[in-house]
Structures are given as C-alpha cells and as structure tokens.
Length: 346
Image (spheres, rainbow, N blue to C red):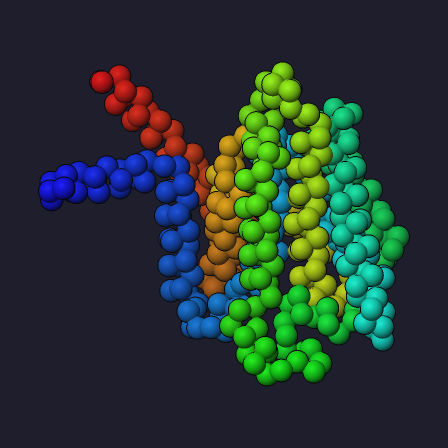
C-alpha cells in the first residue's frame, strides 16, 4: 500500500467521522470541558475530578435510563419521583444499629424499582395509555407514596451503605481501599456498572427489539414482536438505573427525601436529547446520552464559576442547552443535505 492510498483512506475515515451526528456532540463536550477548565482552578487535579464525578453521576444514570425509554418510543415523567420514593424506601427499612437491614433494604428496594417499571409498562404497553399521560399520573402516585413514608427528609442508614458514595467513613476498612476510593470513587463504579448492564442488554434480542419498537410500533407488531412486553422491559431497565441513582444518593446523604428527584426528571430528558436521542424513538445511543448528561453538567459548572447572577442562571442555562441541541440538529441536517447532493452527482 503506497502513501497516496494511505492518505486517501485516512482522509475518507476523517470525512466519515466528521459527517456523523455524534461528532458535533463530542465537539460541544470538548468546548464545555475547555471552558470549565479555564474557569475552575485545579480542574485536572484528582480531588477536583472525583468531586465532578460525584456531582455528575446522578444525572448520568438517570439519563441512561431515560434514553432507553425514549429509544423504545416512550418517555418517563415519573423518574424523579420514583428516585425520591426509592430513597425513602431504603431509609425506611434500614436501621442504623443493624447492618443486615441494609441487605434487606437493597433487595426490597430493587423489587420496588422493578414494580414501578412494570406498572408504567403495563399502563403504556398493555393499556395503550400515551406515555406522557401514564408517567405523569404515576409521578403523583410515587410522590404521594414517598410523602406517606417520609413526610420530611430523614431516616436511618447502616454504616456500610456509605460505600456507595465514599469509603472514607466506613468502619474497619484497610487504608489501601480508602486510597483507591479516593482515586476511583464508588460513583464511577456505579456508572460503569450501568454501562456494562446496558452493553450486555443491547446485545440481546430485547435490546434490538427496543430499537425496533421505537422506530415503528406497528411494523414491530406486524413482525411478530411482543411490543407491549418490550415497552414494559424498557421501563424496567429504566427503573434499574433509577435504583442505582438512589443507592448513590442514600450513600451520599444518608437520608431519604420525597422531593429529592423533582428537578432531575426534565434535566435527564434534556440531557438525552442533547446526547442525540431522538424523541421520536428508535434512534440514538445510550452511551452518547452520557455525553449529553456531561454537557448539561458542565453547563451548570460554567454558569457557577462564571459568577453569573442567580436570577439569570436558569435563563443562561436554557439558552446554552437550546444552542447545543440546535447546533447538533443543524449539523445533522447539513450533513444529510451534503450526502443527498453527493449521491445525486454519482
């Protein structure tokens, strides 16, 4: 292979990369990281990186779950209240002086999370209630139950449950483990666990069917796919990600709160869209939804370190998010037109 051929192949590869819609998302992320690094001192220090990972993890996990549901052609407006409910259940079951209650709490809360997904899935998949209406209704059910269990923030946790946030406050833990935890925080482990969970599922029939149902519910049904079961599975998968988020929050705060997840629902949806997930369903990557969550998280960092007055923070944040979505969409449309023009010339 001569140098001319190698250059052509390299040029072709780069052109194909630039034309992909994910390229613009990555460019936006790089811009956000650069701006944050300029504004935040010691941005690349280990302590700063760990703090940022801890700050970004809840939105990343919720966005991954929301992305699965949106790809399947749905949406989940009950994700925030579901998160709040699960934190309340965890802290209701655990008793500080009884370590074994932490195990009970994990099992029971996981079962509760799956149940929440099943309820949403039955309403949407089997009863054919529009996802917006169904999950809007269940959001009040989850909120009401959470307030019944824990009217005010509080509750008890066992000591070892702090491992979902930090190893520092654990009893009888070797120093080497604490040191590792300072470099690789448990929050990152939760995100990697979520990524592995979806990677395995995406290689299964269920993962493929989720994309098929989101692309066209009617066509998937006519192809023999149990669309109701697939939609229910998508909401159960979403609930698993919500469960992981609840573990992080309870490990961090050592308490439950019926209002904890309220601000995160719409942020997770927005992050998924920024990450290239099509609201029409059937398109996008759950892993690029993580990039969307990072972009949204860095937006908040930039606003904070730029010392923008609080009254303008929401406005500026909204403008930046809209700009990110619009630029990504414009980039995609532009590349589609270029490809059509190139194909017409052949």
